[in-house]
Amino acid sequence: MSFHYLSCLFYLSTHPNSRGIGGICCLMRNWICETDILRGLQTTSKKPRRGIMSKPRILYLPTPSHTRLVFLPDTFENFIRSFDVKVNSKESNYTTEQVAQEIENYEGLVTGWGTPPLDGSVFERAKKLKIIAHSAGSVKFMLSKEVVSKYVVPRGICVFSANEAIAYNVAESTIGYMIMASRRFMEHALAVRLKKAWREPSIPWNGQFLSGSNVGIVGASKVGRQVIRLLKPFDTRIFVYDPYLSELDAEALGVKKVGLDDVFSKCDIITIHAPSTEETFHMVGEKQFALMKDGALLINTSRGSVIDHRALLAKCREGKIRVVLDVTDPEPLPPDSPLRELENVIITPHISGAGYYGYYKIGSSTLQALLDFFAGRKVSGEVSFQNYDALA
Image 1 (cartoon, one colour):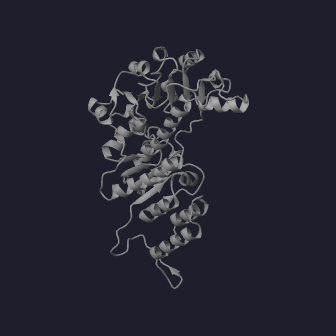
Image 2: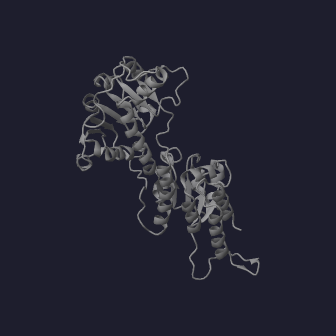
Image 3: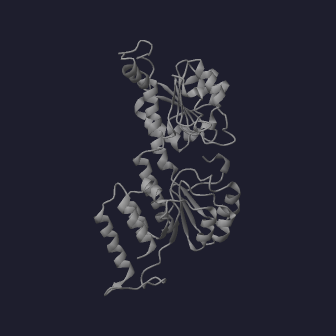
């Protein structure tokens, strides 16, 4: 039995949504059809059988635990059927050296969380490589600017990222934070539980909540645009700061493009969706905090380094704004960080991207990217390296 089918059988038997014996039997039928078992004898050949084109060869780097996280069993089974795949069956990530040793005869490479940097040693041997399908978000950690300019772009290698799939989950979390924090659900719930209070007088129960508010979005990224879409039913006025957003695109999104300071001075709720770059490092600091309305809400689900945390702490200590942080700088914050103790600050452990909906979209969109590429179709989610520094 081929290695990739053994790996898939293992995956199906351990996935929480597996179809169990039925799924395994289905795989067995497919394997039997493809390996020519006659009278108990197995015959294999490296050459494709007459009338059947050989399948593109794919090196699959993610671990089984990553696979179970982002692929439904049917999707992964379809992936295995569609390509000639070597699957990583171990719960250990490849090293850069191991990728370089393996990559030579593969046309496709699937990467994910835990994939090592792909340096020149990999691409010097990856002469046949045509597509890298990243079953996660940012690709910058594994593809340096130098590697992109020396190998990826000149060779025309397609790089796909599933960051749009993750964006669904982050956007949903962001809307949840907006509603929860503006209505102070957490404070009211804790008062009921710990103080046995009913409508604790020190906690406002009325005010400007999400509906009808001015919402500021810093970064018209994939997440930022999903947030804009989800805000539509709430009758909000949306102000966006993004130097790369054109007036035409802003009009199409139904938002008003403004400067960064305008976002902080005009808006009741401000949410950060900017990437971590040299340009955005500590982009939000003392000046912006001084402009915020009393009672305004600041949410960050992007990267902690976008906010100057010293200036943030000073502002939060005034008690005039509320803050929700799903990301921090550093991450996690030290156990003795004062931000952990402030009642007007809610910190969650970088979980806004989690959720079955978006995670399983990672797997399905990764498969679709590979199918589209090898069929000669346009790949939705292909990464553009025209401005590497601005990539998330």
